[in-house]
Length: 44
Image (tube, rainbow, N blue to C red; front, side, top):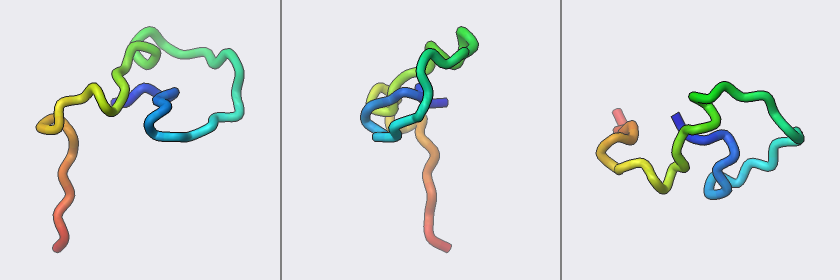
C-alpha cells in the first residue's frame, strides 16, 4: 500500500484529522517504495 496523504500523488483529500489504523498511517510514500516492489502492467 501507499500512504494516503502522499504529496507525490497529488490528491487533495477533503478531510481534516482522518481516523486511520496504525498500519495505514505508517504506509510509505510512493517514492520510498523500491521499484521492484511496484506492480507492473504490460500491454496485451
